[in-house]
Length: 461
Image 1 (cartoon, rainbow, N blue to C red):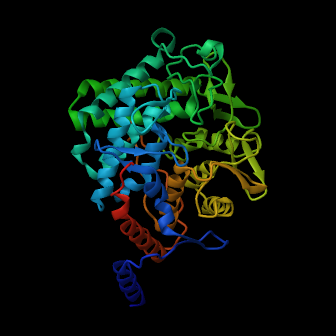
Image 2: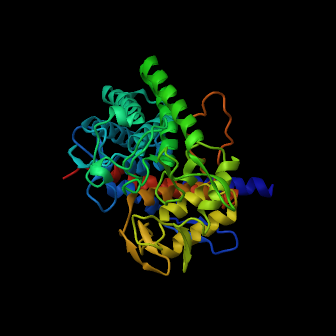
Image 3: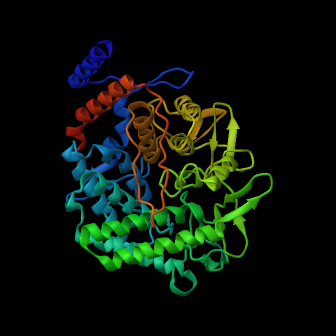
């Protein structure tokens, strides 16, 4: 009877909406964090701009440009609400269409202005993978065939073509960029079967041109693309080409992407060149090696992944820092010793231990901005020193972390494993008990409903 009354009371609370209620996040032996539910939608209200051509431009926080990677990542956490909110579904379709037009403008560019002009042409393997993954997640949630437009099909064809070319970079590609060594051509390499990249997800030049986490994400995106080509367009040739390329790249990662580290054992390298050289590091930017389970490339209990994770989250990794208010991953992109919230968030999302996730949440709460938004990086000894006042990608990933840990919302499922391979799905630890999860879900939904009308009525000036 007590349980029944509790359930009835909770359902009544859910029905009431209770606007402006905070989201409460217990932190396993630490304080309960009270978060403004509206802040979890900040990137939607501030960075998404529906345009007159029916698409949606996404600005990456405080920089007036649209990164292929960031735009998709900023939308991904909110696709789970698209079935209940038609305006949100329309907005996400607009993002996908805008991403398609960007790719068709220049498949090697990583960032664009609002009017489809190239902002930056740094070739990063993960850049075209992210729009494919956004399309996959949207279709998986909604099965909305309206998203399968002619331009989206051309985008998928371009992604496969460019990946296939860059798999044979020496004989096929004409890409060069002034920041790369050797006259803009990049470091020497031997073909491996992986996809060549000029730049890392941080937008820094690769030391060695086969970036392992980028290639892992490309495998996931290509497997997604194979299903999308079949279901959306009945394009069996494109589906076969994508699936075949994914299998080749996965095999190449297995052959060339592993290195042996003394006192650690076998781990995945961050970058290799096919000539025996490797960068054995862990970077905060996503995709990184820790995110291999987040994107369903590896099972959380994969022995090589566990070994790699232990290495990356230790002093053996030159970009793992522990000082002051936090510990976590940094990047060569920002000052040495500075930690990225993105790195803390991905570690917390992929943790098996609730204590590890709770530690990450406490560190984020201690180092965020005064308005609860995430920075690009911060000095853990003096967190009021930071880069970028608010970073749209990190804000969206933080919302994903709260949706899972506080409201018990399930993790996204990315590409199904090929060839009958069975992956144990990753599950972010849920820190809130069941009744509190329901309460938090109601607070999140109420915030979305409160913001929906002004949010989906925006137009670019």
